[in-house]
Length: 327
Image 1 (spheres, rainbow, N blue to C red):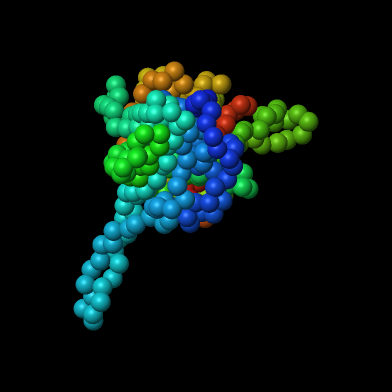
Image 2 (tube, rainbow, N blue to C red):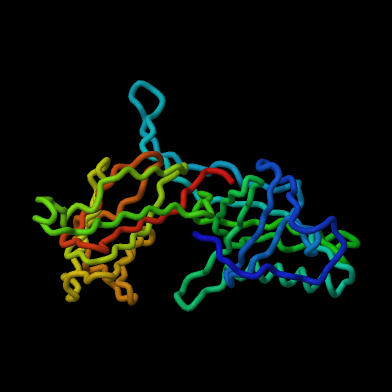
């Protein structure tokens, strides 16, 4: 999931060592953390100058995912691994909130509580919208994970707490345990310009195969790409040569006919979705039941893009976000 670009929260100033400074977080070293709530508002988590910051002691859940192993007993003893299923991740994130006055502290405490618990509100589509926890490193890279609030915004309950400061240990639940790179990987393939067969000398231009290429997934887990196909094209087939999985799109199956020059189809593999450029559902264009909307395994993947009826302007754009075990 791409990081939403939105204004950073700007609470009233308060005492602190300065803004935007890296802080030591267990397991990840010097880093800057932020949280993007479902409305797109970005909340810094590493800057005491905002009125709250992450406590260095107590952060957990940033390491490799937990797996459930399915095994079969072996006749000679022991067992054989049949399947490994990554499990949802739980992150514990302690926050310290403070203010110059009780009123200022309470305003900040309430605002943060709303920002996290908003992930549990059911939207018009009948689903809850996750927030995004992002950790940026000094080299300019960052990784994110989608989170839902579970519990922990309660305070310490000690004498003196809750007046002008308090701490909360948030428990954040992640349905997808993998961290995602904040920068997408993109690839563009476009048909060359067609020429006259006899001018200036006999030549052949393919109207079928747009390209065979190798896509390198540098992450730790399978990624599920988004494809944008630009016409002209009468039929589109994407094949993963290493697995044999493929899917074919036939625009005529929707009653539209072949894609004209400049028209586009957007294919998402997770969750599966096929849309024409105006948002029309084109799921029927897939060659069911044989179609497999395949992902890209870690490492090199040999793939083929075939566009029948292609011409000048025919193109395929591939976009995905690498996924990692750790932050």
